[in-house]
Each structure stands twice: as C-alpha cells, then as structure tokens.
Length: 330
Image (tube, rainbow, N blue to C red; front, side, top):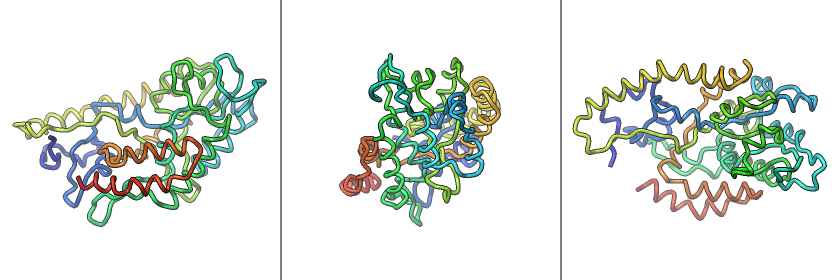
C-alpha cells in the first residue's frame, strides 16, 4: 500500500531535517528499505518524547540538592531516581496511600503505564535489534532487560512510591501540579500545562540503568504522526521535491521557534531545565518494532506484568517469540 521511500531520491532522507533515529530503527535489510518517516512539519514527535519532571520547591524543602549535576556526571540512574523519589513519599496523616482527591498523601512519582515502556528504553533496552544483514530480530531476552524489569517491578509495587493516575478525577498531571507528587513521568507536552504551577519544577532525562551505561536515551512515543506515500502516487518526483522542501523549511523556521521559545522559554523555568531539554532532544530513540506491530502485543503483556509488580516475564517472551518472528517475516 505504501512506497519504499528510498525509491524517491528527491526525498533526501539522510539530511538532518528528517528524524534519523526513526529512520535507523525502521529501515529494513541491506537495501535499507523504509516505508514511513518523520519530519518537522509535524512536531508531535518531540511533544511525545517522555521525560521526568520534578518539583524543585518540594525537593529543596526536603533538604536535597537538585539532580542536574547527577545527570551531568552520568550518575542519574534508576537507583538514584528511586532513592530520591522515596523522600517525597509521605502519608501526611492519611490512613493509606489509596488516592483520594481530598486526601493529603504525597507520592514519590505519579504517571501511568507508559512510564514503564519509556524507562525500559531509558535503560538501553531494545526489543528489536539488527543482525549482520540489517534484518530485525527479537532481542528482548538479555541480562540488561531482566535487570531493568526487576528494578521497575519493585518500584511499581511499592505503595506510595508510585501512583498510577490516568483518569479524569485521578490525573497524574493535576496531582503533580497540586504538589502531591515529587516526580512525574510524562511527555514534554506536559510542560505547557505546568506554567500555572505555584511550585518551581524541573525536567530531567529518563534515568540510565546504571553508571556503566554510556548514554541517556529518550523514548519517542511510537504512535507519533509519521509520513508515507501511497503506491498510487503518479508523480513521485514532484511529491518528493515538495515534501523534502516543506520538511527543510519547517526544520529551519518552525522547529527553532517551537523548541527555543514555546518549550524552552515559555514552559520551562530555568537554564538547567533548558540544558536538560537539549540533552533529551539529542538522544531520541524510536521503537519501530511496536510501530510495525511486530512486538506490540508482546510489549503490552510485558508492561502489564511489570507494572503489576512482577518481573517474571520470561514465559511471556517465550510464548510470543514465534509470533514476533512470524510478524517480522510477514
């Protein structure tokens, strides 16, 4: 139904106005066939990048320094994140951590299930890897994955440390804005909502698995808008020229205003957060396995198990392996 974009040379896919993280993840085989791409006349990819927000005012009142230097020194890890968020966990006179709008309990982190998926990416876990011929294969069964899964499961099952809150009356963003969560996991788009917060807030990249991990990784939600060209297109040269030009102009003229003004200056409140935003923007990771549908069911099952507090996902992966392999071959 859609064309291999490599067959349209007028689309200069190696240029920086095309999202290179998505292309490297989604291309297939030695010919590097690619059937969809992302450019900056849709800004949804960066709006949907997941990150960690934190309440600076609350953390300061707890006698803690800001975590920015931990990020700069390569020490912003899962263990550091989990240890720090526990400082904010407080019943505050409530009988339990069961959420109530009228309650006073404060939580370590508020978010929803996509926090699990994003933090696996932040830990350097890839469900799909490439062999010597650039063909995709399932690579989830690794020591890194199981180590990350165990840490996340322990976090999700600890009452008060984590609050699943993605409902109208129980909303993670509103809870964070009200000062009832020290941290929040969410998309960068959340920053525009937090302009009304009385407390100061900051932004951080997703934590590494451990200090041995070289880079930070930012999860770009796989259901962002992408672009493809139907096989019915009768003038691919004209289409390629126009789309490439629009992408270039949006990258040159629109993205700087969005990035430097709307997000950096209007939504964030300090130079540290703007520095973190640049780090996040430079470390985007896109999961083509989910986008193509190869691993979507598998990762939903894995995520549900981990969020329930159990790291025992080996049997889930084993039972889905042949299905994933069939999906890839198809």
